[in-house]
Amino acid sequence: MPETILSSTQSLCPHCLARIPAWNVQRGEDVYLVKECPRHGRFATVIWRGAPDYTTWGYPRKRPGARVCTTARKNGCPFDCGLCPEHHHQACAVLVEVTQACNLHCPVCFANAGSARIPDPDLATIASWYRSLMDQAGPVNIQLSGGEPTVREDLPDIIALGHRTGFPFVQINTNGLRLGSEPSYAPLLKEAGLDCAFVQFDGLNDRIYRSIRGQDLLRVKLACVENCARAGIGVVLAVTLVPRVNMDALGDLVRFALDHVPHVRGLHLQPIGYIGRYPATPENGDRITLPEIMRALEEQTGGLVRTSFFLPPAGENAHCSFHANLTVLEDKSLVPWVEDREALYKERTENPQEGSGHARNFMARQWSAARQEKEGEDQDELARRLARMQTHSLSISAMAFQDVWNLDLERLKDCHIGIFSPDARIIPFCAYNLSSASGQTLYRGAIKP
Image (cartoon, rainbow, N blue to C red; front, side, top):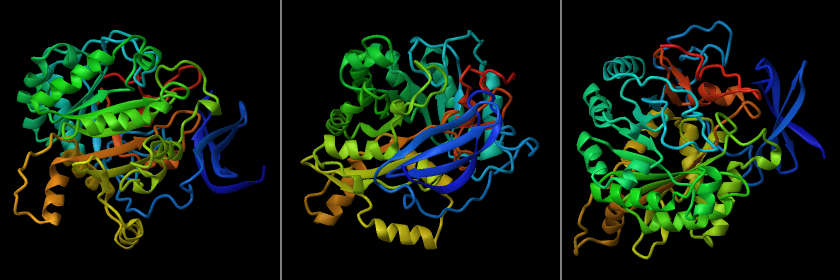
């Protein structure tokens, strides 16, 4: 098949982690990252399949650089993370890992949680992390992660401390087991100031959970959503998509989310990235790309969700994500907030914005619990629609995390999701979790406090 080189970049060898030249290459409607290591040969990994078109997806953005650079450029990307002067954006959201312990041992886990018992940082250490993070990045959105953060008995104190330090939005990244099994736990976290639960929610049958998580979990997942709703905690359903396991579950997940609006605030889809713990070295048949997800959402919802609803990101690299912000009407039909994509593209092209701040503010508004406002009988249609947007909105989004086979260093430099390392550096998510085919890492497990 004829090939067209769309752009050049750099990547890493999956075996030796040497930095090597790479190209984004079009073959028919698909795009591959092609790279060659002098020692280990040629690699071609599919990164985009079909419409919408790879070359026209996205729009120009400002690249203001990191707010504070704590590491100097010495060895070049991705070996100087911290952030270094090569990075294009300040952070939008930062994960703070408060434990490496977990009450599950999933076959799929980006953090490879529970593989080694590492003592939890105490509250004084976390307080120092918060202060350092505020100095480096300002009031970013915080996601408390791990491991499983709810295994810590002092999690309410960690949440409250985050708000006292000045972070306006604090969420937890959770498997939902404790929230689903202890009805009194969600109110405790809400009282501490929890804004959102980012709940691992891979589907609506236990076949899916047995494959991805190793056991039947549907009942406790459903209870988690209900308990968070009663406590007034916003819920984002975070779905790991795995080929031949749950790509056919997207329609059911959308319908479930609509049934649970306004308490469910978002449906966030993450095609499996081969980082951390995963079943085997991937082939191209083990890949799910962003346009495939967009098209599957339209097909499986019978057009209720349309590919035309989805927009490229305002912050990170255009080929990292998509999103749609939707108002859910009384009959559960959906109205996108942006109905004229060409006008938006023109506005973003002529007035490129600092995307990290835009994304940070939107995430805090949309993923927090909905404000309940009564609709007046004398409101006109426009006023009712605007009121409905405030209370009954749903975001549908996807994020394609990179691994060592499809790593594009230009995409990595655009990243605005970081992990706060034990030695107090902000490291881009995909760099922090990156590992070679044999398990060698650059950052995770290699950094000491």
